[in-house]
Length: 118
Image (cartoon, rainbow, N blue to C red; front, side, top):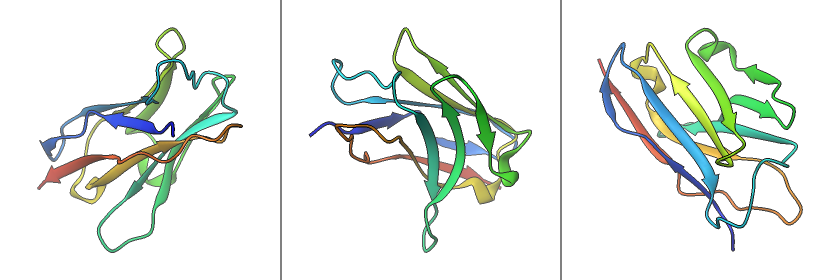
């Protein structure tokens, strides 16, 4: 089954930056046509929450808690969606996932761990 594959997570100090990448696990599957792709995160003991989305047409939307710090973008040539994270805070520590609706569906991936030390 095709899954999303996330990468780029790391341990970083507060105030630092990371860039996460998202693609499909099978190179023949392009996420360019998905209606939207979202980045989500889940911290230990908390519900998964939406961080940012980007539509097929490039329209973006952000959760209030990341506005002005994170930026979502896409490279259609690479069929990849990115999440640039700046001014990271300890509370950004979580496993980050990407996902978007499609037919046939693509499953959630394993996520990528982001740990911000204060």
